[in-house]
Length: 338
Image 1: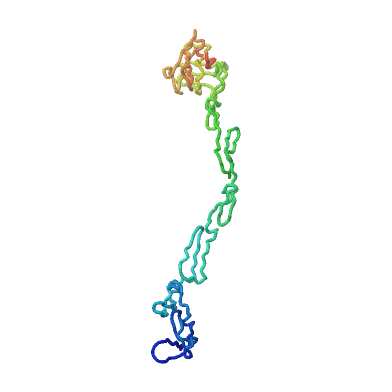
Image 2 (image 1 turned 135 degrees about the vertical axis):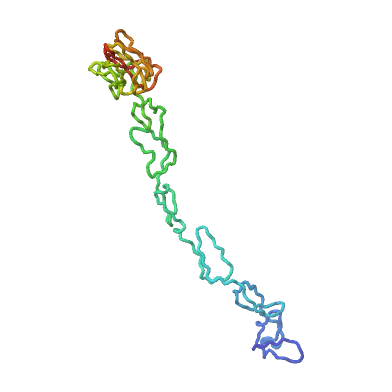
C-alpha cells in the first residue's frame, strides 16, 4: 500500500523514505510528504482539471473525477447512449439526423439505387427529340421529331396532316372553302360530306319528252294513276286513251321546277287534255293536284302552259286526257324560262 504523510499533529512521523507517492500523484493545491519531497510537505503537481462530463462517458461505465470542493476523487457513472452500429438508407433528396451518443464505427448511411427511384416505362420514342429523362436508372435521350404549324388544303387524294410518332408544336389546320355548298356540286356527288344538288347549266328549255325521246331524267316513262283509261307509248307520242274513263298518269320521278317559270306539254290531238303538278304519287283526279291547266288550243291540239314560277323544289308532272271520241297524243313535255 502506498503511503503519504500529511504534516500536522505532535511528535515525529513517517518520512519520505516510508512514502511511495510522489508529487506527481498529489493533486495541485494539496500538500503532502511524498517519496520525492525530502521529508518536507510539498504541493502536488497532479493536474485534476478535466472537461469530461457524465454525458460524455459511455452509459453504465464508471470513472473517477476530482471534486475541487471536497478535495476528493469521486466515482462517476457515464450517461452517453450506446448507439452501436447505426444504419440508414436514404432516397433522393432525403436526409438523416445523426443521433448523439456512442457509435462503434460499423454503421452506414447508404443511398437507394437510382433505378429504384426512377421507375417508368418510357423509351426514346416516347420523349421529344433532344430532351432527356431518367428511366429505371438509365438516362434516355428522346427521338420524337417535332412538326410545326401547317395548313392542309384538301385535294383529290388523301393528305397526311401529321405523321405518326410526331409532336405537333403548332396548330394543324385543314383549309375550308365557303363555296363548298350543295348548289355548287353535281347532284348526287358527295364532297367532304356535302352532297350536291346542281344538275348542270340551266338552259332556257329543258326537255323531258320530245317526240318519242326521253331526256334529263334518271327514271323515264310514266305511271298510270287511274283505274280506267290506258296509256300507249308509240315511237313519236304517248297516247292517253279513254276506256270507260279518261286516263291520268304521272312521270316516274319528281323533277326540279326551280329556275323555270313554265311547264309545257304539247298535244297533237285530243278533246280534253290537262297538265298539272303534285307531290302525291297516287293522285287520280285533277282536284288532287296542286295546280293544273287545260290545253290552250282548238280541237284539242296545241300546247298547255302551266305557270310554275312560284314553285321551287321537286314535283311530279301529271297528264290527263282521252275521251270517247279522240285520244290525247302527247308529243312534247318540257320546262321553259319563257
